[in-house]
Image (cartoon, rainbow, N blue to C red; front, top):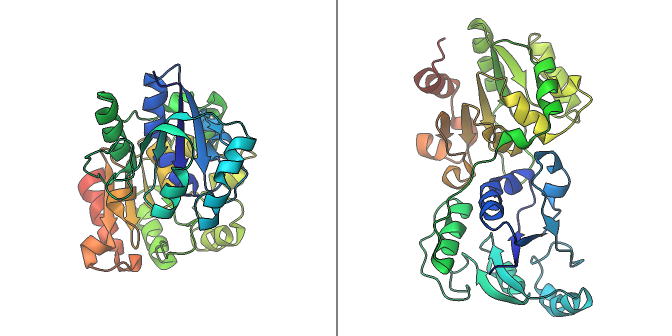
Length: 331
C-alpha cells in the first residue's frame, strides 16, 4: 500500500512542470487513495501559474529556497523535517539527476527512493533500469519494476480545462486559417530564439498562402509585439486582446490553429497538451529530451540538420519544407 508519495523537480520553468504531467496523471489515476506531495527548487506551478489545468498537487513546504542546490541544505534538512512533523514517505520520486540535489533529497525519511542519478545507484532498493530520454518514461519504468506494475504515461485531457478558456479562444480566433508562432524564450541562459528576420519571412510566406500568422506572445513583450505588427500588419496577437492571462488559454488557442511553429519554450509544451500539429525548432537544448512526442510534431534540430547548436543555422527553407512534407502546407 502506497499512502504518500513525494515528487521532486529541480527545474524552475513552466515547461519543466508541464513535461511531468503525464507522470502525475497516471500515478493519480492508478493510485487513487494515495496522497501526493510536490517539492521543487522553485515554485509549485501546478498550484499557481498552471492552476487552470486543474491538476493540483500539494506542496511540501520545507522553507528551503532552491532546495537541493546548496550543499549546506544537508545541514538543515533533518531539523526542517522534525519542525514540520513530516512522516516518512512510502515513495520519493527524484525527477532530476544532479547528484548534490539527489543526496540532499534522500535525507528526507522514506521507505523507497527512485532516482535516475548515477544510473539509479542511489535508489532504494537498487534498480537496474535503462535511462530513457524522457524523464517520466524512465521514472515509470522504475516504478513498474519496483512494484511489478505496467503503468504507461497518461496524456493530459484538455477537457479538464474550464470551458471559459475555450469560449475565449473561439472569440479571439473565430473560424479561419491560422498558424501559431511562438518565438520568445523564458530561460535567458541559452540562446534558443530564432532570428526575427526569419520569423518575418515565414510570416510573409504564410500570408501568401492565405494563412494568418498568430503570435503567442505575452503582454509584457509589448515592444516586440509593436515591432512585429509594424512589419506584418495582418499578424494577430490574441493574448494582447484578452483580459484572461493563463497558460490554459494558450492551450485552447492551440486548438484553433492549423499548425504552429515554435522554439523550445513553455508555450511549446502548452500547445503539445492539445496535440497541436507543430514544427519545433531546437538549437542548444536536447530535442530528444524536451521535444513533444506525438503524430504531427516535427522536430528541426540544428545539431542534427547542420551540426551546430546555433539555432539560427535552421533556414526558412528548412521550416517551409517540413511544413510541406508533414503538414500539407503549400507555398
